[in-house]
Amino acid sequence: MQAARIVQVSVQDVRFPTSREQHGSDAMHTDPDYSVAYVVIDTDSDLRGFGLTFTVGKGTEIVVCAVQALSALVVGKTLQEIVSDFRGFYRLLTSDGQMRWVGPEKGVIQLATAAVLNAVWDMWARAEGKPVWKLLVDMDPKQLISCIDFRYITDALTEKEALEILLEAQEGKKKREEQMLREGYPAYTTSCAWLGYSDQQLQELCSEALAEGWTKFKVKVGADLQDDIRRCRLIRQMIGPNNMLMIDANQRWDVGEAVEWVTRLSEFRPLWIEEPTSPDDILGHAAISKALAPLHIGVATGEQCQNRVMFKQFLQASALQFVQIDSCRVGSINENLAILLMACKFKVPVCPHAGGVGLCELVQHLILFDYICVSASLDNRMCEYVNHLHEHFKSPTVIRNAHYMPPQDPGYSTEMLEDSVEKHQFPQGEVWKKIPQ
Image 1 (tube, one colour):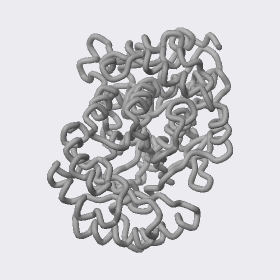
Image 2 (cartoon, rainbow, N blue to C red; image 1 turned 60 degrees about the horizontal axis):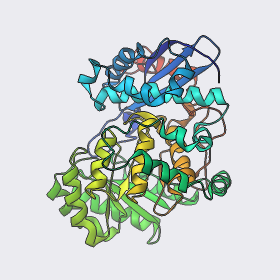
Image 3 (cartoon, one colour; image 1 turned 30 degrees about the vertical axis):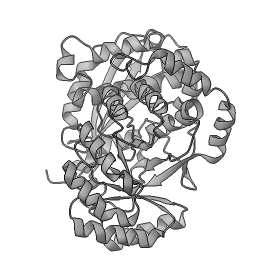
Image 4 (tube, rainbow, N blue to C red; image 1 turned 120 degrees about the vertical axis):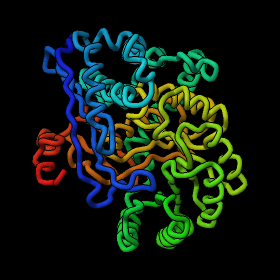
């Protein structure tokens, strides 16, 4: 491994005006401008690391400030120092005696932590000449365990149990890796049915997706019940009775309202209702899960679940039937490893949240690792895909036959095109100078 010493952590506010065409619109986020706090780590060699955390416009500047605050804990360290005690480095970032107060391990500071750590993982994979998923797959189980902070979760998963899961999954690992390289990982699309899209747009996009081989579709709901019934009926008619449908309320409802609303939509046979209520309401999700079980509709959540402790409680309370990890909401790969292992122990399938800017590029590495080295199962498992903004990355996501194909370039697929970054910097970039503020 290169003895590269980190000399600078830079961060830029990069935003895309997606709200102008209603891309990404849902019941709670009606006008998102897909954005990132984009981090570049420079070393005293030619080795660099690229990371990001996703936002939806306003507030990205706050994440940028948090990254700048964390950078003092990173500059001066070598890559070898970090990865030889990755658990310690993770705890250093999340447990600074003063900055911890504005978390801890949640909110803006956790988004910033994810951006920095995503860049570190990208740099490590580049140093090894591997894509991140392959770096993880080739790693010794004990080394994987050493990257995880088990503090606060040992009542649900001990280090010994986590190691046993990884060791058990060694059997058949090579065949599963070959399968992924050959077939890819199953995906579903959210791109057809954003809440702000017209019926005509929805129909056209569904037709295109069906022609491309998509069989799993998600539709945004939650703003108006009668409109939801009409749109769900329309999309069910478009995709037919045998293709899969999911619905997503993006935290719009109270608990009782969620049960009542989803019951009205049950005729369209959704596999799950996603984020039916506050992302912090674990017992509320448990009540919704129990109420919807007779309808065979599961509850999915996690894209705004803030840390491994909350995921632990969701699993302990049987409050979700689908775990939705996010590559930027929690503390990067380190924390997602813990969540993947807990989900495996509790036998709950992982179906990651993706889309936005760079989320598909990032999370594809985690699902490949999960299947090859942890869960060894594709039952009820799929990863979200949104077809926006991939053209701004040097190693964009590759979809074939509605499957994520394993990335081949070294790193975490997070490096953006310099021209894209320059044009979309907020507020001084060329794109934003043309838009009235």
